[in-house]
Amino acid sequence: MSIRGIAFLLVVFLTFASAGNAQNVNGQVSGRVTDPQNAVIGGAAVRLTNDLTQQVREFVTDETGAFVFLSLVPGDYSLAVELPGFKTYQQKGIHVSAQERLDLHDIKLALGEVANTVTVEAEQARVQTTTADRIDTLTQSTIDGIPMPSRSFLAATRVVPGSQSTSSVGGGSINGGQTGQLVLQLDGIIQQDSGAPSSNANVGRFNVDPDAVNEVQVQVNSLNAEFGSRAGGQVLVTTKSGANEFHGSLSEHLRNEALDSNSFFNNKNGIRRPQYRFHNFGGTIGGPVLLPFTSFNKGRNRLFFFYAEEHQINHGANTNSFTLPTAAEVAGDFSQTTDSKGNLIPIIDPETGKQFPNNVIPSNRISSVGQAMMRLLPSVGPVTTAFGTYQGMPSAGGVTAPLVIDPTGLRGYNTLSTFPVDAPQTTRTLRVDFNFGPKTNVYVRLLQTLQNSIGVGSGQTLNGMNWGEFVNTNP
Image (cartoon, rainbow, N blue to C red; front, side, top):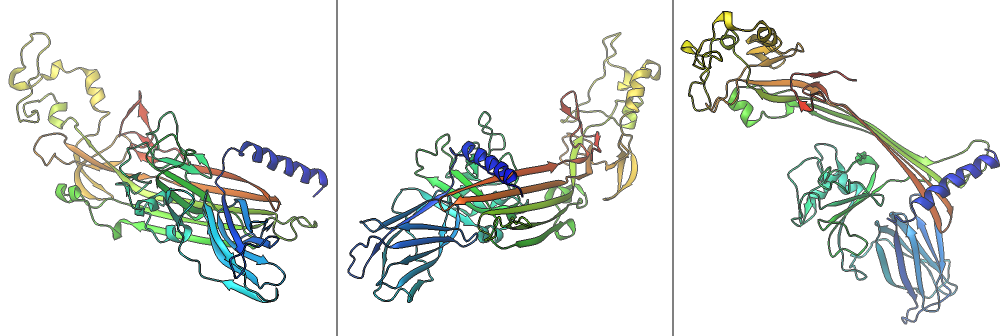
């Protein structure tokens, strides 16, 4: 790559860095270095390494023995402390969450040669002492172990104490907060419409592949001043970044009506179990960005990428209830037409102002235009559908549906139709991270979601009103 091309890349990254400077989801690690007599040690070399990207940050302790690493990308880190006359101290598995201020407190160095190393493998239970926030962090391994019927990673927030939800799609309300009072942030950016808080309140405006989520952090109370806007809890989501080695994964998730039970009302109404086939497949790949025939990123610690793609094939069904004219009513016979209480509905002759005899409209009084309109509606008759044989009707679009009389006896409807519906969806997530140096790094994250609903009653409208008989066949 030419110098001009590399310069262009740097300008692009700097532009995004400036635009995103106000949003910060990074954490920090601090501590103090002491000797065996608890005296502070200045001049000790402290090295913090990102386990995923192998990016190294260095710090020399001041006269108080203190050190601090700011703007850390959420993830796992390893710490090393060196000073002549003391054994090298190493601590592994230090997990830093989004916006976490992790204090390691006193790190006591043992006397000895630098070549000798004291390694701390197990991390002690953390006690947050710098803030009064109550935060629950769900890591990738936790999210993977929680059932997600709709492949929405926010469903994992339902296991957090104080969270309530009746939906299998999004996150729940926190500590009794109202709908629309939950704030959802993705990589530091609010994912809801501020002008309509209840719109997509608990699911966000953009879908993210669960395999592209690094962690989900739920703040339930005692929020800092930076988290204003709403009082229903804060959910901070961070996406994965690439590593200094190539890694990938493939996944497949399957649901089928053969594995499900029928619903209570379907059993009560004598309707067979409808088709429900939920098939997700996808994969991820991430690693360093290598430019052939150049020395750029030769150490694999400068530029990284992570890409995730998931395809959802959802075969389901829409069940709608209608009141359609019977064959007798189409012929003008309303002698059996009653309201929900069983009272006959009188048909009034507009010329005389009186009820038609026997509530039957004479054939010569029926409008030819009205008869033509009636022929556009489904006609009653026995049909065979994908769900079995019913007394039913072919719809205007050629789709069959059963005829079911309202079992409550209230005559609320005379048709209960179950139409197959396909709901394909594709989700793509791309993240690119670039390390300018030991103290500066930026990233760009791109999201794309393609979704549709194909079938009867899906996506088609008439004068702004949904009409279930229309068939959406858009690819």
